[in-house]
Length: 214
Image (cartoon, rainbow, N blue to C red):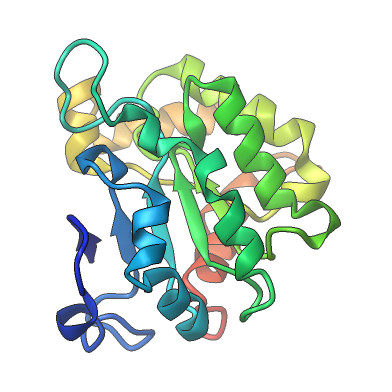
């Protein structure tokens, strides 16, 4: 379920979002004009942490609205804005369960921040931080993500999710689903040392959704 703007969301969201469904998590899209500080102010982080509810946060400087030029709220996607809240809730059910979507894509500083969160150095951020490669329609984006993951594979193994953003990828990349998957497989190649498909399509998604027993 997506959160569009601030306000008291629990009257309508609370009964609908749980491990039993019909919605299993919260989608935050900061390009619509809000920041993690505003999400914290309405109590959503506390509620998600206490109930083990996963959050997907758009973490890319591009997206919707796709207007040309610098969008006034692009910087709201900066994962560095999350540091105080990841630290605050790190001891509540293992910490906030967050997928920083798109792995920062073309922003090296954003990727580095996400990787630091996911590796949970010195146990500062909790153990439930993830990221994904949804809508990576260009090979160079996949190569950047793979290089960043492989550099830290020991500390972030099991924290990278495969994804498509199916409807958006058709708009921005003109790729059908089979071509998208084949492109991913050509770069994230399984071998004796790396089991990317199992990790990214099975183990990591179950862990992120808090559904290991499902």
